[in-house]
Structure formats: structure tokens, C-alpha cells
Length: 215
Image (cartoon, rainbow, N blue to C red; front, side):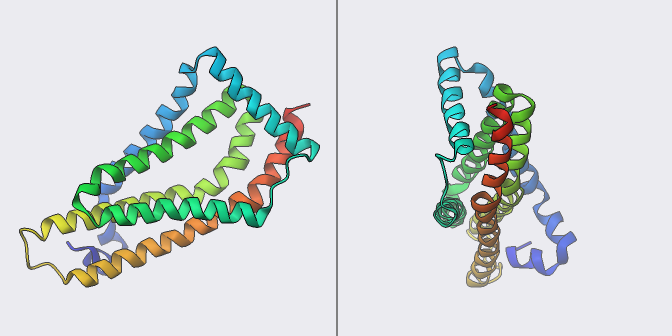
């Protein structure tokens, strides 16, 4: 089934045609999250203490008011980073050889999130858990699904390009490209929403939790 036809068949048809790809991408993401969280346990004492020191300075800066973020600047930085990720996946999907790189992007994003959450919980206990839940989770509730959907779309288009080398009966490539690009554009919108949460919502929760954590 082509990229466009999978959408025209409705949501159930879309899921059936992409189920394997979603499974693969989700496994990569979960694997990255798990390895990232476990990596915290293999840090040596000096590395752990150094990171813990940076974290304490950061949290005290929030509590004392010495560290204040400029929401518009933070929004621009977060959106730029998120859109770079989506854009990279979109470009990789335009090439057959981009498949391994797509997998690497998903895995590394999971690795970073997993390490961040794991380190906060290990170093701060319950306070770290709440900090992760309120400061890391909100934006990732949008960013991670957008990442997964974009990665699946990129893999689907990349595999479509591969199939077209043997099957010339596929739908016009321009139509497939427009459908692919439109879906990625929608995911870019979700990434902007994630950037908004990261810039305006997460800092509020971070200051709240930091007030309890550094007492």
C-alpha cells in the first residue's frame, strides 16, 4: 500500500499498513529510554558528583532568582531544536540510505530523555521523580509522539522509494511526496507545541520543585 493510500483507507487501514514500522520505532525509543536510564548506574563517582554539582547550582539559581529564563528566547531555542529533529528525519526519509540514521535519531532521543529522568530520580529521589514528571514529561508528551510518527513516515517514504525501483505501478511520486511532507509539517506543529510547554510551563514547575529540593 502506498503512502497516500494508507491514509485514504482510514485510520485502521493506516495502522495496519504501518504497524510493523511503529513497532520497530517504539522498540528503538523504549530501548533508548531504558539504556539511558541504566547509563546513570555506570557513571563513575567523579562524573556523578560533577553532574550533581551542576544540577544543584542550577536548582539554587532557580530558587534564588539568579537564573531566570527568557520565555520567548527559550521558546525559539526549543522550537529550533525540535524542528531540526523533524526536518532531519524528513530529509533522511527522502533517501533509501537514511533508514539507519532515522533509527539512530529515535534511539538517541530516547537515550537523552531516559538519562535525564534516571539521573534526576537517582540523585534527588522523590523530588527528582516529581521534577522529571512535571518538568521533563509535559513537552515530551507532544515531542515523543511527534518524533515517532515522523520517523515512521520517513521510513515509509524511504521504503516506498525502494519499492519504486521494481514496481513502477505505484502512485505518482509527487503525490506521495506531498502527503509525506504534509504529515511531517503537522508533526512540526506538535513540536512547536512541545517547545511552548518547555519554555512557558516546565520552568514554572521546575521552580516549584526546586524550592523543596534545595532546602
